[in-house]
Length: 79
Image (tube, rainbow, N blue to C red; front, side, top):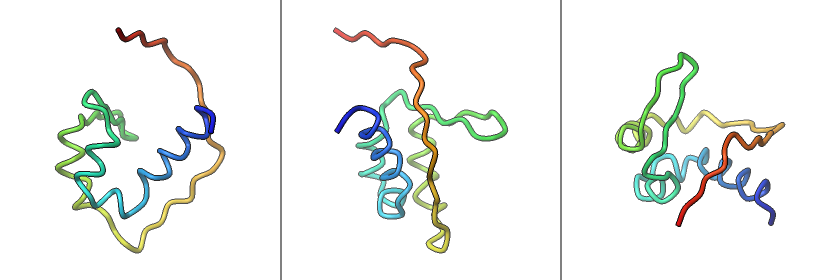
């Protein structure tokens, strides 16, 4: 699995009801410096998402994901 395939897999996994309702699984998938940007431009950190998301899931809503695109926006160096 290349990096593109892996990132798409993780994104789809994150949208599954089993993950979205499980705080422990979300905690494992999201980095500590995670930031979510909503359509109005507001940002939410990991703690806010972990507190909110598991309670927002509607079992009747399903996500249809397609046409993924990846773009490198910066290089990250870690020692």
